[in-house]
Image 1 (spheres, rainbow, N blue to C red):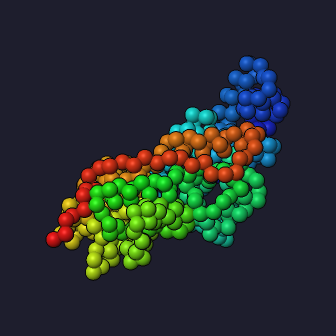
Image 2: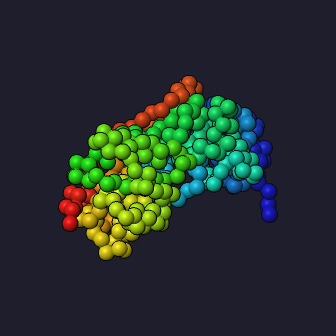
Image 3: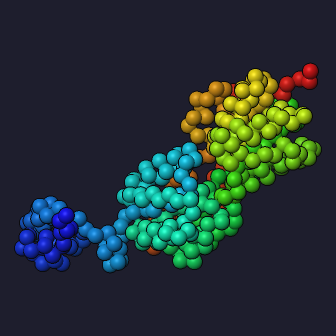
Length: 339
């Protein structure tokens, strides 16, 4: 296997100094057009590409933003990364996406450190509060913005939706339809978002003079299969709920499947709401009533925040919260009349 060509070899072939060759390839500093043409032709002939690690060690910008994800799989991540990619490219940056169950595990921490050094800044999407890498990145002061993290305060900018308010709005909608026994399918504790949505659920019930019933709160792990299993548990109660609020859309899809599997109808027998408004929420049957996150606006703000820090601006720790939109579709309806 032929070793990679060096900048010195490019300079020698083009008949210029290594400094002149470097300027031409980096597009920095004056180089005559004739020399630039010879240098670029030599680089193409030798298949030369600049070493990004060496460039970073010289303090140059890589024009890369790292997107670190704990456990890629959620459809919300797909929506966010798509929007982040479009905004990053608009601003002249490319993305490196790194997925790991945890970034603080042996081997993963070294990879995290290596990739962060290649990047000008980082976006941490739905990070897990128990991952020690959060403490590392906070101490280092590296340009970094968190997205969809509601577990604790961070000394970093955090872009998030108004989880608690959005959840309260969803449950108030169900209460307005006459539902009084409303189940809640929770997600995981990792990002803190499920806990905030559960708080909104409880807020709405208490405001209506209802005490949250622990029997109606079950865990669904933010997955469709988990939502299905959680709903089966709710349906097995002596007095089943007439409505179910799920902490994300994927669990809501599972809830609808579980209800249908018992020969019941959504929303005639049981209403279902979700949270996120992922693309498929418009195409399931029945179409899903849900709380929409403004993914495009959130992604744009996250990218602009990290780029501002990369370009020398001061990081502004604190939550940047975006209002949600409640979207009524066909999965909710009036509470059934007592038989």
